Amino acid sequence: MDWFAAPHALLSHLPVATGLLLPWALLAAQRPGRGIRAWWTVSRYLGWLGLGGLLASLLSGFLSLSGLGLMPVHRISLRLLGGPGPESLLLRHVLLGSGSLLLGGAALWAMTRPRKEHQSLGLLALGLGLLWSLLLVLTGDNGHGLAHLQKRAAAPAAPAAVLVQAAPPAPTRVSAPPRDSEAQAPLRALDYAALQPVHPDPVKSLAHGGRWIRAWVSPEAAVAYRAGGTLPAGTLVVLSSQEDRWGRPGPEVGPLYALEIQAAGPSLTFYWPRVPAERRGEVAGATRVYWRGGDAQLDACRTCHAAGLADPAKRSRWRPARRTD
Image (cartoon, rainbow, N blue to C red; front, side, top):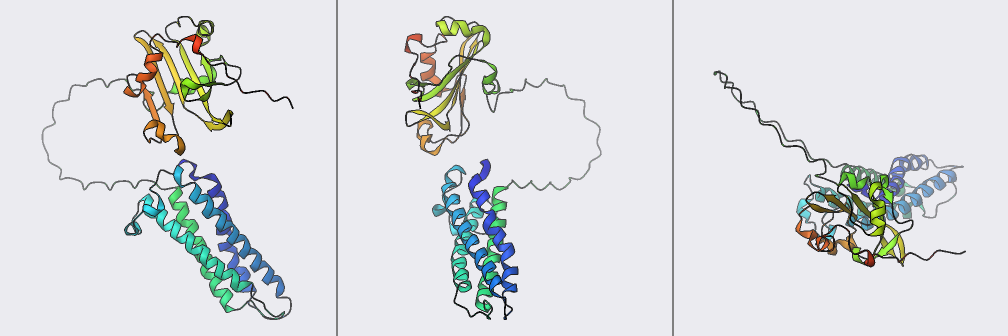
């Protein structure tokens, strides 16, 4: 689930811990008599901690929904509530969390009512607190299932009746085609840090979406790249990129651009493993992009790189201003 929003996963431990600890404090606070105020304080402290952690978890969870690749909660039908899919689990998780917030407010109100020095917290606080604790634990368990959702293995087919027959002739073995090691990701381009860097600092490239880029080149072709000459066959050029943020390289990693000089001509690759929601309009709404070779999406790139390197005169020299303080 792509890290399942780390802040949400961390914050969710607070309400779950409250659900496990609060019942013991509430039971201890039911004994009337002197010295009972200490258990009032423990119960109320756990109540405020659980309610604050639950509110923070709900906010972080809603903020992380766009990166999970699931249907928005407001579009999920209640008919899916009992199903096994991720959307139904998400809907149950949201309903349990929202119900926990409401019940937690009621339980905290019951625990903070004015009481006399010798009185217990009362059966109302105990009942609401126990129900809230149960709902918190159920919410946490449902969230754990959502974060570790896996496809169910298909049930094995029933064994067929065994027929005794003559063994068929051995089939002629056909050699399997060679496996494409880069079918899922450009492995050589991802190892760009092993190449020789050309830019000491990132430069802003308008031709590459206004991103800040650094060029990495095969060591034997670094001199030709800097001079804008013809690159020898086998050369690999990779541009790593960062998204712009207020005129400087930001924390968001951009796509990876790769150019390989082959005997048949330049071969281009565009790899963006995780497209931010606000940039998906550039790639027709895709959440992950991997274009290479003769992909039609690279036609504009092939126009600039028909001879390998683009026009060296158009290279960007726009570097972020250095701080002097």
